[in-house]
Length: 331
Image (cartoon, rainbow, N blue to C red; front, side):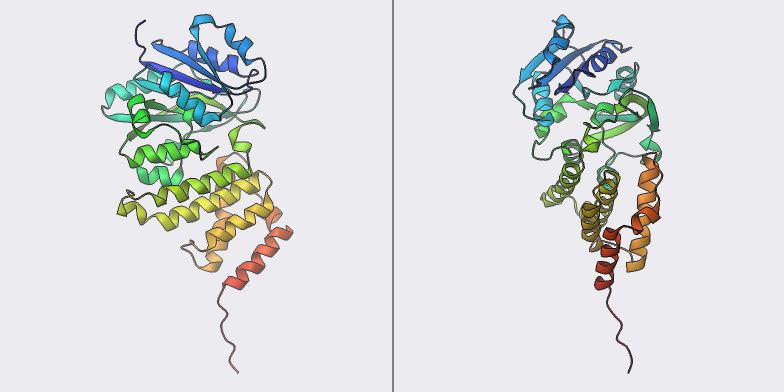
Protein backbone atom coordinates (compact mmCIF):
# COMPACT_ATOMS: atom_id res chain seq x y z
CA UNK A 1 0.00 0.00 0.00
CA UNK A 2 1.54 3.30 -1.09
CA UNK A 3 1.83 6.10 1.44
CA UNK A 4 -0.68 8.90 0.80
CA UNK A 5 0.45 12.49 0.97
CA UNK A 6 -2.59 13.61 2.98
CA UNK A 7 -4.53 11.93 5.76
CA UNK A 8 -8.03 13.33 6.22
CA UNK A 9 -9.12 12.70 9.81
CA UNK A 10 -12.85 12.90 10.54
CA UNK A 11 -13.88 12.58 14.22
CA UNK A 12 -17.56 11.68 14.49
CA UNK A 13 -19.99 11.35 17.35
CA UNK A 14 -23.66 10.63 16.61
CA UNK A 15 -23.42 12.48 13.31
CA UNK A 16 -25.09 10.03 10.92
CA UNK A 17 -27.15 12.87 9.43
CA UNK A 18 -24.13 14.78 8.11
CA UNK A 19 -21.28 12.25 7.98
CA UNK A 20 -22.01 10.95 4.43
CA UNK A 21 -21.81 14.47 3.01
CA UNK A 22 -18.49 15.05 4.80
CA UNK A 23 -16.98 11.81 3.46
CA UNK A 24 -18.32 12.40 -0.05
CA UNK A 25 -16.75 15.88 -0.07
CA UNK A 26 -13.34 14.27 0.52
CA UNK A 27 -13.87 11.64 -2.16
CA UNK A 28 -14.77 14.46 -4.59
CA UNK A 29 -11.46 16.32 -4.10
CA UNK A 30 -9.54 17.36 -7.21
CA UNK A 31 -6.41 16.06 -5.43
CA UNK A 32 -6.71 12.32 -4.91
CA UNK A 33 -3.55 11.19 -3.06
CA UNK A 34 -5.20 10.89 0.33
CA UNK A 35 -6.56 8.47 2.89
CA UNK A 36 -9.72 8.98 4.92
CA UNK A 37 -9.70 8.02 8.60
CA UNK A 38 -13.02 8.25 10.44
CA UNK A 39 -12.77 7.93 14.20
CA UNK A 40 -16.17 6.95 15.58
CA UNK A 41 -16.08 8.39 19.08
CA UNK A 42 -18.54 5.99 20.69
CA UNK A 43 -21.57 6.87 18.57
CA UNK A 44 -24.92 5.36 19.54
CA UNK A 45 -26.71 6.18 16.28
CA UNK A 46 -26.34 4.49 12.85
CA UNK A 47 -22.79 5.79 12.25
CA UNK A 48 -21.43 2.24 11.91
CA UNK A 49 -23.99 1.47 9.18
CA UNK A 50 -23.06 4.67 7.33
CA UNK A 51 -19.37 3.77 7.42
CA UNK A 52 -19.95 0.21 6.24
CA UNK A 53 -21.31 1.54 2.96
CA UNK A 54 -17.92 3.00 2.02
CA UNK A 55 -15.96 -0.25 2.20
CA UNK A 56 -12.21 0.17 1.86
CA UNK A 57 -12.50 3.78 0.66
CA UNK A 58 -12.64 4.79 4.33
CA UNK A 59 -10.56 3.53 7.24
CA UNK A 60 -13.07 3.43 10.07
CA UNK A 61 -12.04 2.92 13.69
CA UNK A 62 -14.20 2.84 16.80
CA UNK A 63 -13.31 4.05 20.28
CA UNK A 64 -15.22 4.51 23.50
CA UNK A 65 -16.51 8.06 23.79
CA UNK A 66 -13.58 10.26 24.83
CA UNK A 67 -14.29 13.61 23.18
CA UNK A 68 -13.13 15.22 19.96
CA UNK A 69 -9.56 15.94 21.13
CA UNK A 70 -8.85 12.28 21.80
CA UNK A 71 -10.65 11.25 18.62
CA UNK A 72 -8.43 13.56 16.56
CA UNK A 73 -5.35 12.32 18.40
CA UNK A 74 -6.35 8.74 17.58
CA UNK A 75 -6.53 9.80 13.94
CA UNK A 76 -3.08 11.39 14.13
CA UNK A 77 -1.64 8.13 15.49
CA UNK A 78 -3.12 6.17 12.58
CA UNK A 79 -2.27 8.71 9.88
CA UNK A 80 0.36 7.86 7.27
CA UNK A 81 0.29 11.12 5.30
CA UNK A 82 2.86 13.90 5.45
CA UNK A 83 -0.04 16.32 5.91
CA UNK A 84 -3.18 16.00 8.02
CA UNK A 85 -6.50 17.66 7.22
CA UNK A 86 -9.10 17.55 9.98
CA UNK A 87 -12.73 17.59 8.92
CA UNK A 88 -15.54 17.76 11.45
CA UNK A 89 -18.25 15.27 10.56
CA UNK A 90 -20.83 18.04 10.02
CA UNK A 91 -18.61 20.15 7.73
CA UNK A 92 -18.08 19.87 3.97
CA UNK A 93 -14.89 20.40 1.97
CA UNK A 94 -15.08 22.28 -1.31
CA UNK A 95 -13.54 20.28 -4.20
CA UNK A 96 -10.27 22.23 -4.53
CA UNK A 97 -9.39 22.32 -0.81
CA UNK A 98 -6.51 19.83 -0.68
CA UNK A 99 -5.05 20.74 -4.08
CA UNK A 100 -4.96 24.47 -3.34
CA UNK A 101 -3.49 24.13 0.15
CA UNK A 102 -0.81 21.70 -1.01
CA UNK A 103 0.15 24.18 -3.71
CA UNK A 104 0.85 26.70 -0.94
CA UNK A 105 2.90 24.08 0.90
CA UNK A 106 4.94 23.35 -2.22
CA UNK A 107 5.55 27.04 -2.88
CA UNK A 108 6.67 27.87 0.66
CA UNK A 109 9.04 25.37 2.22
CA UNK A 110 8.99 25.10 5.98
CA UNK A 111 5.31 25.71 6.61
CA UNK A 112 3.61 23.63 9.27
CA UNK A 113 0.09 25.06 9.00
CA UNK A 114 -1.90 26.32 6.03
CA UNK A 115 -5.15 28.12 6.74
CA UNK A 116 -8.01 29.23 4.50
CA UNK A 117 -11.45 30.81 4.56
CA UNK A 118 -14.84 29.19 5.04
CA UNK A 119 -18.53 29.66 4.51
CA UNK A 120 -20.81 29.63 7.49
CA UNK A 121 -23.78 27.51 6.45
CA UNK A 122 -26.99 26.51 8.19
CA UNK A 123 -28.08 22.99 9.10
CA UNK A 124 -29.28 22.39 5.53
CA UNK A 125 -26.07 23.70 3.95
CA UNK A 126 -27.37 27.10 2.83
CA UNK A 127 -24.61 29.73 2.91
CA UNK A 128 -25.10 32.29 5.66
CA UNK A 129 -21.94 34.32 5.03
CA UNK A 130 -18.35 33.94 3.81
CA UNK A 131 -15.51 34.30 6.31
CA UNK A 132 -12.27 35.67 4.82
CA UNK A 133 -10.16 36.45 7.86
CA UNK A 134 -6.95 36.99 5.88
CA UNK A 135 -8.34 40.46 5.11
CA UNK A 136 -8.40 41.28 8.82
CA UNK A 137 -5.42 39.16 9.89
CA UNK A 138 -3.01 39.05 6.91
CA UNK A 139 -0.09 37.43 8.76
CA UNK A 140 -0.45 34.29 10.89
CA UNK A 141 2.10 34.92 13.63
CA UNK A 142 2.01 33.99 17.30
CA UNK A 143 0.86 37.52 18.05
CA UNK A 144 -2.01 37.39 15.55
CA UNK A 145 -3.09 33.88 16.61
CA UNK A 146 -3.19 35.16 20.18
CA UNK A 147 -4.97 38.42 19.37
CA UNK A 148 -7.56 37.18 16.88
CA UNK A 149 -7.70 33.38 17.36
CA UNK A 150 -8.84 32.75 13.76
CA UNK A 151 -8.91 28.96 14.21
CA UNK A 152 -11.11 26.46 12.36
CA UNK A 153 -9.57 22.98 12.00
CA UNK A 154 -11.74 22.02 9.01
CA UNK A 155 -10.26 24.95 7.06
CA UNK A 156 -6.65 24.08 7.91
CA UNK A 157 -3.89 21.71 6.83
CA UNK A 158 -1.22 20.58 9.31
CA UNK A 159 2.14 18.92 8.79
CA UNK A 160 1.95 15.64 10.69
CA UNK A 161 5.42 15.87 12.21
CA UNK A 162 4.47 19.11 13.97
CA UNK A 163 1.35 17.55 15.47
CA UNK A 164 3.38 14.57 16.67
CA UNK A 165 6.13 16.81 18.04
CA UNK A 166 3.79 18.73 20.36
CA UNK A 167 1.67 15.71 21.32
CA UNK A 168 -1.56 16.59 19.51
CA UNK A 169 -4.68 18.09 21.05
CA UNK A 170 -4.96 18.66 24.79
CA UNK A 171 -8.26 17.14 25.99
CA UNK A 172 -8.34 19.43 29.04
CA UNK A 173 -9.76 22.35 27.04
CA UNK A 174 -12.95 21.29 25.26
CA UNK A 175 -14.34 22.81 23.09
CA UNK A 176 -11.46 25.31 22.63
CA UNK A 177 -8.79 22.59 22.30
CA UNK A 178 -8.22 23.64 18.68
CA UNK A 179 -7.23 27.19 19.70
CA UNK A 180 -4.92 25.81 22.39
CA UNK A 181 -3.27 23.50 19.84
CA UNK A 182 -2.59 26.29 17.36
CA UNK A 183 -1.20 28.59 20.07
CA UNK A 184 1.10 25.77 21.22
CA UNK A 185 2.27 25.12 17.66
CA UNK A 186 2.96 28.80 17.05
CA UNK A 187 4.81 29.13 20.37
CA UNK A 188 7.09 26.26 19.31
CA UNK A 189 7.89 28.02 16.03
CA UNK A 190 5.48 26.34 13.61
CA UNK A 191 5.09 28.67 10.62
CA UNK A 192 1.68 29.30 9.07
CA UNK A 193 0.37 30.95 5.91
CA UNK A 194 -3.00 31.78 4.41
CA UNK A 195 -4.49 30.30 1.30
CA UNK A 196 -6.76 33.28 0.54
CA UNK A 197 -9.65 31.15 -0.66
CA UNK A 198 -12.77 29.63 0.86
CA UNK A 199 -12.32 25.86 1.06
CA UNK A 200 -14.97 24.52 3.43
CA UNK A 201 -18.58 24.91 4.51
CA UNK A 202 -18.71 25.22 8.30
CA UNK A 203 -22.12 24.12 9.49
CA UNK A 204 -23.92 26.04 12.24
CA UNK A 205 -26.56 24.09 14.12
CA UNK A 206 -27.71 23.55 17.70
CA UNK A 207 -25.16 20.80 18.38
CA UNK A 208 -22.12 22.55 16.87
CA UNK A 209 -19.27 23.88 19.02
CA UNK A 210 -20.21 27.53 18.51
CA UNK A 211 -23.53 26.93 20.28
CA UNK A 212 -22.05 25.45 23.46
CA UNK A 213 -22.34 28.68 25.39
CA UNK A 214 -20.78 28.50 28.83
CA UNK A 215 -18.39 25.58 28.13
CA UNK A 216 -16.96 27.48 25.14
CA UNK A 217 -16.53 30.65 27.18
CA UNK A 218 -14.89 28.96 30.15
CA UNK A 219 -12.67 26.87 27.91
CA UNK A 220 -11.34 29.84 25.96
CA UNK A 221 -10.61 31.75 29.16
CA UNK A 222 -8.77 28.68 30.49
CA UNK A 223 -6.72 28.45 27.29
CA UNK A 224 -5.50 32.03 27.71
CA UNK A 225 -4.67 31.40 31.38
CA UNK A 226 -2.75 28.28 30.39
CA UNK A 227 -0.87 30.01 27.57
CA UNK A 228 0.50 32.79 29.76
CA UNK A 229 1.42 30.31 32.51
CA UNK A 230 4.02 28.68 30.25
CA UNK A 231 7.64 29.59 31.01
CA UNK A 232 8.78 29.81 27.37
CA UNK A 233 6.45 32.65 26.31
CA UNK A 234 8.70 35.31 24.71
CA UNK A 235 8.98 38.63 26.52
CA UNK A 236 7.57 40.46 23.50
CA UNK A 237 4.42 38.34 23.80
CA UNK A 238 4.20 38.77 27.57
CA UNK A 239 3.83 42.49 26.92
CA UNK A 240 0.57 41.62 25.17
CA UNK A 241 -0.91 39.74 28.12
CA UNK A 242 -3.09 42.56 29.45
CA UNK A 243 -4.55 43.52 26.05
CA UNK A 244 -5.00 39.85 25.12
CA UNK A 245 -6.88 39.10 28.31
CA UNK A 246 -9.03 42.21 27.91
CA UNK A 247 -9.98 41.54 24.29
CA UNK A 248 -10.59 37.84 24.92
CA UNK A 249 -12.87 38.51 27.89
CA UNK A 250 -14.86 41.10 25.92
CA UNK A 251 -15.28 38.65 23.04
CA UNK A 252 -16.41 35.96 25.50
CA UNK A 253 -18.91 38.43 26.97
CA UNK A 254 -20.32 39.14 23.51
CA UNK A 255 -20.47 35.45 22.75
CA UNK A 256 -22.41 34.82 25.96
CA UNK A 257 -24.81 37.61 25.00
CA UNK A 258 -25.13 36.03 21.54
CA UNK A 259 -25.95 32.62 23.06
CA UNK A 260 -28.42 34.04 25.60
CA UNK A 261 -26.33 33.98 28.79
CA UNK A 262 -26.81 37.59 29.88
CA UNK A 263 -25.91 37.17 33.55
CA UNK A 264 -22.65 35.45 32.60
CA UNK A 265 -22.00 38.18 30.01
CA UNK A 266 -21.97 40.67 32.88
CA UNK A 267 -19.48 38.58 34.85
CA UNK A 268 -17.02 38.46 31.95
CA UNK A 269 -17.30 42.21 31.32
CA UNK A 270 -16.50 42.72 34.99
CA UNK A 271 -13.46 40.47 34.58
CA UNK A 272 -12.33 42.49 31.57
CA UNK A 273 -12.51 45.76 33.53
CA UNK A 274 -9.20 45.30 35.36
CA UNK A 275 -7.38 44.69 32.06
CA UNK A 276 -8.91 47.59 30.14
CA UNK A 277 -6.44 50.05 28.60
CA UNK A 278 -9.21 52.67 28.42
CA UNK A 279 -10.63 55.25 30.80
CA UNK A 280 -13.84 54.13 32.54
CA UNK A 281 -16.36 55.73 30.16
CA UNK A 282 -14.22 54.80 27.16
CA UNK A 283 -14.29 51.18 28.33
CA UNK A 284 -18.09 51.12 28.28
CA UNK A 285 -18.12 52.65 24.80
CA UNK A 286 -15.54 50.09 23.68
CA UNK A 287 -17.71 47.26 25.00
CA UNK A 288 -20.63 48.50 22.89
CA UNK A 289 -18.46 49.07 19.80
CA UNK A 290 -16.92 45.61 20.19
CA UNK A 291 -20.33 43.94 20.51
CA UNK A 292 -21.43 45.72 17.33
CA UNK A 293 -18.31 44.64 15.43
CA UNK A 294 -18.47 41.02 16.63
CA UNK A 295 -22.16 40.81 15.71
CA UNK A 296 -21.51 42.18 12.23
CA UNK A 297 -18.73 39.63 11.84
CA UNK A 298 -21.31 36.92 12.46
CA UNK A 299 -23.88 38.47 10.15
CA UNK A 300 -26.13 39.70 12.95
CA UNK A 301 -27.48 43.10 13.86
CA UNK A 302 -26.59 44.30 17.36
CA UNK A 303 -29.04 46.62 19.06
CA UNK A 304 -27.33 48.24 22.02
CA UNK A 305 -30.65 49.45 23.43
CA UNK A 306 -31.80 45.85 23.83
CA UNK A 307 -28.82 45.24 26.12
CA UNK A 308 -28.79 48.45 28.15
CA UNK A 309 -32.47 48.02 29.04
CA UNK A 310 -31.86 44.67 30.73
CA UNK A 311 -31.74 44.48 34.54
CA UNK A 312 -28.34 42.78 34.24
CA UNK A 313 -26.89 45.78 32.41
CA UNK A 314 -28.26 48.17 35.04
CA UNK A 315 -26.57 46.08 37.72
CA UNK A 316 -23.35 46.18 35.70
CA UNK A 317 -23.50 50.00 35.45
CA UNK A 318 -24.00 50.24 39.22
CA UNK A 319 -20.93 48.05 39.65
CA UNK A 320 -18.95 50.23 37.21
CA UNK A 321 -19.86 53.36 39.17
CA UNK A 322 -18.47 51.71 42.28
CA UNK A 323 -15.15 51.11 40.51
CA UNK A 324 -14.69 54.77 39.52
CA UNK A 325 -12.86 56.80 42.16
CA UNK A 326 -15.15 59.51 43.52
CA UNK A 327 -13.88 63.10 43.52
CA UNK A 328 -14.24 64.62 47.02
CA UNK A 329 -16.79 67.44 47.19
CA UNK A 330 -15.47 70.83 48.29
CA UNK A 331 -17.05 72.17 51.46
